[in-house]
Amino acid sequence: MSSVMVEALESRRMLSASAPFMTSVENAQAVGPAIHASVQAAKPPTAKLHGRPITTGLSSYSFTVTYHSSVGINASTIATGNLSLSGPSGYVATPTLVSMSPASNAKTIVAVYSVTPPSGATFTTSDNGIYTATLLAGSVSDINNLSTTSPVRVGTYKVQIKAVPAPTAKLVAQTMTAGASSYSFQVIYHGSVPINASTIATGNLIVTGPAGYQQTATLASISPSHNSATIKANYSITGASGAFGSADNGTYTVSLVAGSVMNTKGASAAAAVVGTFAVSIQGSSPPPTSIPNMVGTYTGTNIVPSAGSYHYVSLNVANEDASGHISGSWVTDVGVVFSFTGTVAADGTFTYNFSTPANTNHATGPVTGNGTGSGAGTNALSFSFTATSAGFTAPGTMSVTKG
Image 1 (tube, rainbow, N blue to C red):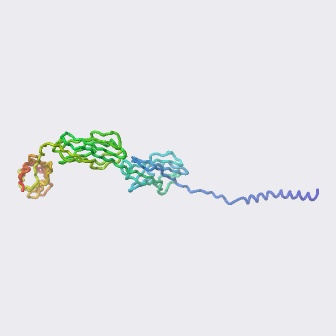
Image 2: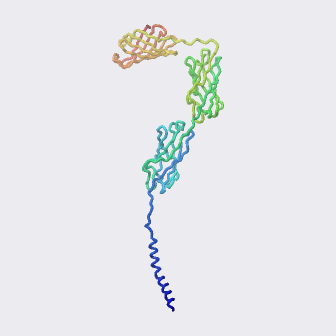
């Protein structure tokens, strides 16, 4: 074997023997920095409200809140009391839990809550504005009992109800020229929103007229009988004495009662004068009954024999209306004041009730009583009465003259 070949073989042997050493060095250099684990801090559940604007007069409103947690929501913590709702004019409420899905622990749970109108049976224009729902601290937790430590705003919804024009009313009536037991007239109701036919009834209208006349108009018929933009309603009234005659002549006013006629969106008409009509019946009529006028100041005596009471009195009839209702007082010479009310008849007789509070001049205490009298319309009045107090019941009389 030549020397050249021997050197070549030796060189290859040495290279082969050094390979393991080189591999270990390369592996050592390949080892990098120490491995760092990245662990994020646990987060409490999140909540987001989803709700459509309120644009009509609902009696209740529901919205959803979506709860989410990477580890899972504790379903048992979702309940009425999770949320606080705030809105216009200081409105505050607690939404009621209606349902949730799923009803068991899950990473995402959708809960449905409901609220009622702030100011009445339905939402109205007075409720318009933005309402904000807030998740209360600690109220909803994940399966590890982690929850928010402070209140969290979860969203808003709007109430944006457009104002609805109220119904209008117009009187259609003719002058009454002949006597009759009743009088009929028509009122036409109209609106841009259909009239609620069920609200047209006896009680919609009050009719007033001469000599204190006042009567609620009776509904006779409506056309059409269903909800409609225009409804014609026929009403009737009777005369003051049961029938209309020339004594009832004058102008009569028909007035709409506030809130009595509504449209299908709940808007109602305000109180208003619908119109007037005239009663002008020719012919004689009996003169109106005349009630004597008793108003005035009188002086005289008041006697209760069984009580040994004899006093000078000053009596004042302060008021008397067209129906003969009177009121006033009398005072005795020892300063005791009696108040009275009563009714005068056309023949000058009258009935009355009287009373006085406890008084130092009446050891027996308050005195009450009632009686009858005569002479209304003249200068001399006569009274008879029965007085009652804690210590006695006794008859008495009083005679007074005007001036």
